[in-house]
Length: 79
Image (cartoon, rainbow, N blue to C red; front, side):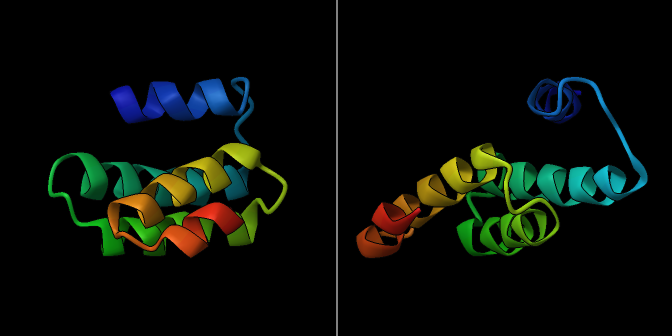
C-alpha cells in the first residue's frame, strides 16, 4: 500500500535483499507512527533502518520527526 509506495520512492525502485528487511522495518515504523501513535516502537524500527542504510538521509528525517513527537528536542536537532 502506501508504505510500499513511499519506500520505493525513497529507493528509486531498486530493491535488493537487504532492502526487503529495511522495508519491513520501515513499514512497521510508519504503521506504529500513523495508526497507533506508538512513537517508541516506530523509533526502534527506524533505528534498524539506519543501521542497515546509514547514508539514507530520509530515515534521519523520520527519526527527527519521531523525536519531536516524543518531546526530545535535543535528539531531534541532532538528527
